[in-house]
Image (cartoon, rainbow, N blue to C red):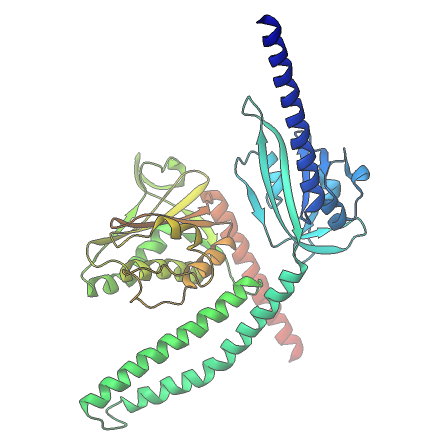
Length: 425
């Protein structure tokens, strides 16, 4: 019996060894066959695996790249040729402590011959048995063809939207004149038809505007003039402007500021020893932020038949968080991952009759990315949805310094303009 057991044990060991060898061979075949670049970086930042796809994209041979610091091989720059900072580089973000997969599809890779190739790259951490970082796996691909096609689509949408807005605006103007009692006389039935046509024309005009904005957001032409905003006051004023829309549908609009997460009393309005309210400073374009909040609020009103909508802000020392919460129909779980994609709309019986372009949330995401912000949603069918926005927080000192810098810049521009005018005269 003993001899049989020993033989069985030997067979099992041999099978395991063969299985491992087969798995390694299969992995090697797959890594050699795929066009995507794959590299494995150890905890010291040295390249330990570099597949043929990576060699083809970067111009570095496998033997050359191995045991080099990854920053010598994976050199990333933006569309202006400026090197990525550590906060922008997906691999560096992992080494700085991120435990999530980091993706970037806007950068360019500088090859060994100093050519710039547009790439899409993702970096994922490898954790050891002690839950400490043991390495990083990065996968990247050449997206030159996709970028060209993307630009062609963007150019077409931009041109078509711009050209079509002019006749639509003219139609809208003529319809407005037709409904003006001082200009024309029409019966009640004709007025109803004209009002419906006017509403449809306005919707079409908004669609063209959204298409134009999305095209600009996609290729980096979205204009932005960031400045220091105190979000508490900003949101409070915005809620006052939006309240009528909620009242019209019989909904309650509630505004909250602060909360248990507000832990930095130095960034607060203080009277004596009593904290009156926290000061949540961020740097962003007020008009763009108004566009984002208004879009989220409009969606909340559309999909909420009764109850209330809550707009609030809270935060900690690093982040300011805005939330827009409703008591509406909710969003199916399977739709949530796709919600911020272009043209994506939830399609069910509760939403099918409500109009929309499917671009609002995509545009909102692109705007927030301009300010290193992010947006996500938590929702449950029948219980409503809450949209969250996180933005980097400025301390009071940082906000004051930024304001002074902006004031000095404005003064310099005014004095330069006055000097130029005097020289011309």
